[in-house]
Image (cartoon, rainbow, N blue to C red; front, side, top):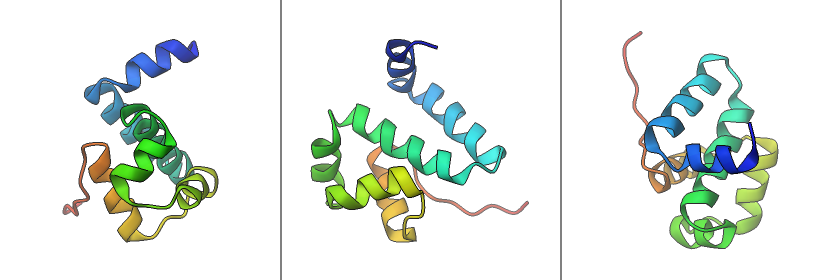
Amino acid sequence: MKKSDFIKDMLDQDNCTAYLNEQLDSRKLKAFISGLVKIGRLKHKGMSGLEKKTKIPRQTLYNMEKIGNPTIRNLNILLKAVGYHLQVKIK
């Protein structure tokens, strides 16, 4: 997939949802977090826009993207910034 196709796909909420669920289903948690940050960057016109929207410091966002181990607070904020929320369901 070309980068421009990925960007176009990730601007569609249904495609974002499918992509993120695929990462979760395959237990690729680091990829899931990284994907959330990338989607946030696309939706908010870069890292500075995402930083402004979430009030999460830029370095923390970079670390979340690279390391993939956010606090539950930061994960929740990031999810909200890209149009999702955290929910617990019975298995």
